Image (tube, rainbow, N blue to C red):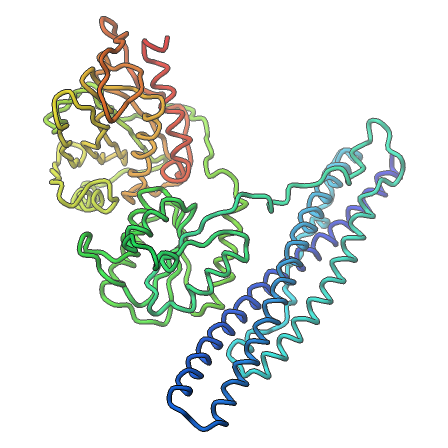
Length: 583
């Protein structure tokens, strides 16, 4: 056993050294891809400028030598572009290989560590944790991005040599890795775990391709937008930009908002210019896209350009963006070369990240303010008396002072409109009852008494304790309100995202609960927005029952954004399960 332990320990040390080296190679490869990608973009811009200069000279009939010089420069730039794109493809392939090997090496370290713990009955010494300081060794090609053609040729030659050297190093490391994955001796039946070659790790490279929406005004950010388009593609994902819709008959604003709905994340660039203001919203396209992404609960990455002067309207928009904490990552940049590595890191993190939700059991349920017995209380509910209510209470919150509650109450109507949930033409009615602030939203009436109409938001409440609550009508038709197993989770998810979009709750953990007031006339059925039902089963008539969920666990703030669907599904299923029709 001791001899076996020494052998595994030696193998573990080699594996840790190799894993650290492969991490350096992976960082190095990623840096090379970014630099070469920037170079390709620069050459494309140079070629476009030279082509325009050639066309101008042709039209003005210049001296022959001047036109020949431009032709020569254009041909050289074209050749450099071909070379740079070829080297970029090589760099991308090497990065993928480095990723695979690094993940395999990390898995080998994990398995060997577990084996050593089993043999020794203890955790290995802390000096074998393999956490080396990672340094990148990619050649410094940044100067070539602003240099003459000769310097670009030299940089490309240097990149080619570096890629050749890394290819050799990766081959050598792969051979060493696979040799160490072979069993030292034929394993016994209970020692089969020593053969690591049959335990290929999940690399994360098989993750679903992401659609990344790139939102900004183009003026003042031309280079960054063009660079990001190629970067997202180089990382294996799909960029979505307004430039992709320039030839469509649909207005660009509408086309982009439709495309935004299909995206997995939205990347916002804040530059000096606010952009064209659309008369229907009084906002720029980027501002509209921010509101839409916020209302959809979409992960948002915001990068602000430094050393530029913002227009007054852009400065105000930046203040709006920076006022929100939920599901928003912020950073800054000065140049495209500065921006690309930051964005690449966040996209990789998003693509390989775990589920954003984490639940924890509560020792004691918190005190929530329920409104199940209050009725509609003067709300304009278009005749509906059954309301869905959703409550979100931040944990470890001291609540609000009277002054803080007053200030938040004054901003609440504006926050409600900013989410896009309520149109600018809908009158809001703020009020200040004892212990909370409220905003009432009038529900629109159906076309006729027997027409079906979907659920609608009718009230938002902010309590002194920090609890934020929303109430809404349920979908209903001439036969009454409906608990639709498909529509109810969607409605609750929408209210969760709306709550997050208000930008009030910023604590890491929250408690979420839902209930239905006056549920006697509700029925479990399918809501059809085109026609009313002619019959329904009212199992609740003559019975005394309540529809509300327990607040016995907390959840991370992601429940108000990316995790809203999962949380809403649980709440909806619980409410329906408590209905007499489901028993």
